[in-house]
Image (tube, rainbow, N blue to C red; front, top):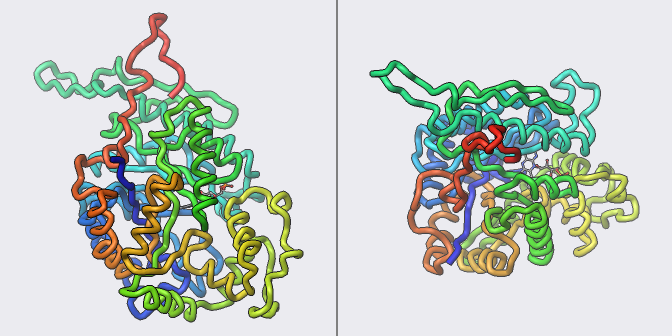
Length: 449
Ligand SMILES: Cc1cc2nc3c(=O)[nH]c(=O)nc-3n(C[C@H](O)[C@H](O)[C@H](O)COP(=O)(O)O)c2cc1C
């Protein structure tokens, strides 16, 4: 029986925008590596597939009210690697604001030092303010970011393949350290990138990091169909999640790939109580800690409209929202508009709805109820697993690991122990061969990745 894949999505202090103010949070530890090492060890004890760090090369401009600074993923995950042995380590890195050769080296290091546990959340960076940190007047347009991302993945894949598996010889007798006939320049010269190669690190334990993707626009889903082995996504309802799941799986198949080897992992942010009333009260306690200045700023970022000055207990002015076309891409925009159309919330109710996890699925209930809902999405064709996004950390994860994981295990829905030690083995993904490993009869390296 196929089982769920579970990642722990880590945000400093937790995912709820008011997490750092909650009585059970530990905000003074958000720059203490032992805080994350303890968390990762707990997730490993719960046999989670991976811990995942989001990232962006700019400071969100509403850090006054929430612990929304950025931890650079490679350094923090490397320190977590040293404190763990099995849990996967998924780092976000931008194809827009990094160079392929540098990114290939960073992931090569993370995969070597973790003995095969690296995953790459491939983003093009949605935050336009990042442009000014790299000398650009404008953030590159959505379509051109994805065009660069496509070429970027082709280049780094070739770099990770550029050492064949048996290139490293280490023959002290013969005095041969490496067989340089099995180390290949990639000689990439494309529309946006030129990289000679080879990489300056031997092939990594996983062959390539696990490729993760999280964009949900048309460009994003097309990119996912071509490259993703895991897809992060945000959905509020089973119906929407099921539609997305069916859509991306059919796109993967149309791209000539096996949909069974692409894991669709929606986010879930659970408030857990011994009774449903207790769980709902906990969620309300968090919402009471929210600050409209922060929440309205977040809403402006998601919807492209500033509702400052509106009566918070009045309706959302639906007629003043931009259309999807005006807003352009940005899948999270549609998630929020769907909430407005489905529930006709007041502005305050909408702010509280988004406070938990920025448009991801927030749910409150007993451990049994949370397990029931996850099982319904998993067996209902809406998810292969989940990004678990605790409202606050580290305590908010403990209750999930201690109370929900045992139920999932009893139901045969989740592993009781790891049967491998790499992220690829946790996800049930094959280790890709190097594209240079077998030369075609004409001596040319085979094309494609
Ligand atoms: C679970 C999840 C995590 C994400 N993490 C990041 C991130 O760390 N950095 C980032 O720039 N975008 C992140 N995103 C946003 C997407 O990667 C993507 O940038 C955004 O959806 C815009 O792409 P789209 O227009 O194709 O939807 C995340 C999305 C999801 C669902």
